Length: 227
Length: 108
Image (cartoon, rainbow over all chains, first blue to last red; front, top):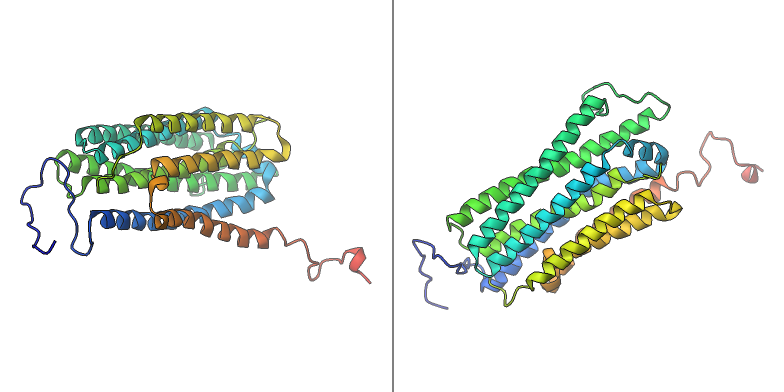
């Protein structure tokens, strides 16, 4: 313990824990980093929490208009996207498991699968956005709004919240895709000092984005489909 | 840090299957006539799915107590935010407003 650690000039092929000097051991380093990530995720919950609170306040005051506007969204595409994102969470969890077992080749494969599924999600989301713009259901930047009835203002509010909430979520997806691309590249080149720690942290972020969508999908797409 | 033994591979697929069942259930609930129970049912399913992801995919189940506490902290702070905001918005009609006609019971 007291001998100065030799800094390897080239990182070994199999993962070996590299412990920073301010940690006692690899276990402490791992737990501290995971705790830090959860603290960040708690702040992310509050970030989405503001939007969710605004949504709750307006939905309880304009329930009928929200239900009506919600029926304009495409349930099939929303459900497919949920399925895609849940599957990407599975592949990410498998990547984390593989890296813990020291199987970095498998980890890279699973991360690339996650990346591909994330891209599919964003592609579907983009096509939905384009459709909404063509339909005149995007009350952004002074664009004309299709609905003109007595509840048009409240429906406009729903679509404003829809674009804000899914937009912020999509932004997190874009960040996540960048993160995964970086991770796959570094992992493939064996350039990470603590591969399983880094994969674990990136995995936590990806799963959080999935959890956010688990709530957004029923709140936005499925308010009331009985009519 | 190489953990002792990661969970069995099968566990991940079981959790995934449960998540798909949850997705089907939440879509089914929105098409069902449940009256006032639609929202609670939908939220319960979403919370169950989120819990599954957190416990098994995010390893909260095998994490130290401090990490579990941090994981729940976000939820608790969000509940505080929601509770205080709604305690304002949902009680605005409870008291007579200045300039508004007084309810008959309070008029004299």
